[in-house]
Length: 94
Image (cartoon, rainbow, N blue to C red; front, side):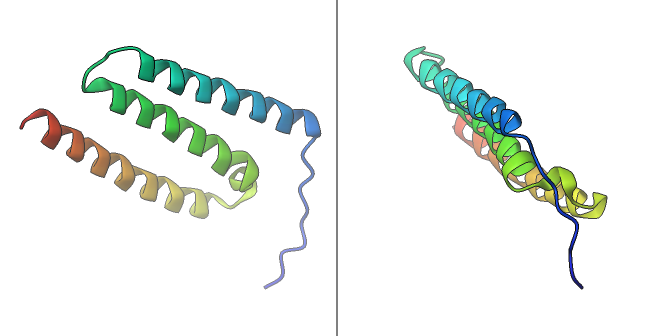
């Protein structure tokens, strides 16, 4: 099976993606300076998840893939969120 369809993304889109990733990285660093106790790690992981979604969507071209492939990726990310949530509940209830 040969995939011959090409997708051309404008450089401005990549510029906006770079800017968004830099902003989220700055927010992550700023959150570490604020004392949120146990929520600091959770906020940092949420921001990291948003950044990974941006990378998956634009750099790995997930937006051009079939809906079935997108469903599989969402399922994997849901398992990831479940594991992180269970880890936080374990940490908070100790």
